[in-house]
Image 1 (tube, rainbow, N blue to C red):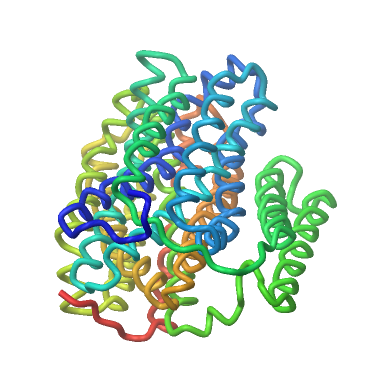
Image 2 (image 1 turned 60 degrees about the horizontal axis):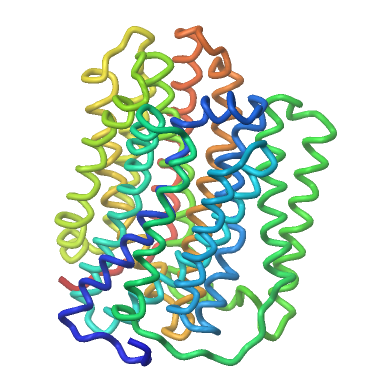
Length: 468
């Protein structure tokens, strides 16, 4: 389909499956490497500190370029950027899978992140183009789209364990190639083309935003080894602050900025994005350390560790698709966001009581299910509020902002909580009591983030109900 027309109603839901696949894949790529990291470290020669950058290289580039991806989607057409993003993601996946040293591996991960930064905002823009004229269908579409994110995160852990145990770690990257081919083949027939708009591209803004985020994450990750009082730590944090300040100054002065600051005058957009940022800062550290607890303390191997997270994934998908839209229609988005974040905080605090001699059934399953229910209830309404608060012609920008918030929250939340966990025993590999203390600290910190998010949402969000 080469025209700009929207596909017939009967095909919109098939198009939604393709859009959800995009969300599933870009989030899966944040988590699929988790179980494979020890083998990658052995084969490629990563240091213990450098190994965390296999995750961070993807997330930092992904989060740092999302605003640019959203702007390009608005200017050049969402479907065009959707296809280009898949091409770049596939290329980066091949580089990462074929890497023979840490530098090549991190380069491949960075290219993957750049591709994801084009896919994610264009996918959300396409969703709005397909369903934005019908509030009821839009809520359902957001539910399916939202469920794809946690499903991708948990499926990444599961697939990463399966692939690492029964194939080899490069296949955690190669798996993206056939998915990209499928997406590229299906997009012209299923997705609306959209129209290009006039405007300039703020490359300097994209550069300062990406470098500022990278410097902040690097400083926090290094602080666990160099120390928080070290001149290098504060120097890097200062550089990050200067770069982010420069980005904001550029956005305030330019006639065609990457992120027009006036967009945050839209009711609920800023508050909903803050909720998404803090949601990522609480949720991503949870699954990261939960997987480590299962493997390093309870003794699960790669495949069982991934499988242990499937009940949580199933509940999230059911909650997002079947439960959240109905509750949003009845109680409103604000009530659902606050309630979901409180439940997430409760589940995380429950997880902080893990034991060195614990069991999956007692220490993990019930608490993780409570956290999953909270995630399901908070994610959809905060995402939909953030996107729908913007004007239609700023759909790509709003999509980029909300994705940026979630990814920045994920990267910074994981960096900070990893440093706290390491300082409290999580770095003592082989010492189960010390590891448990460190992981417990991580869950407690994530619970505090989720609770703070609930309080801020209660104070800053305006009441808003969604059509049933």
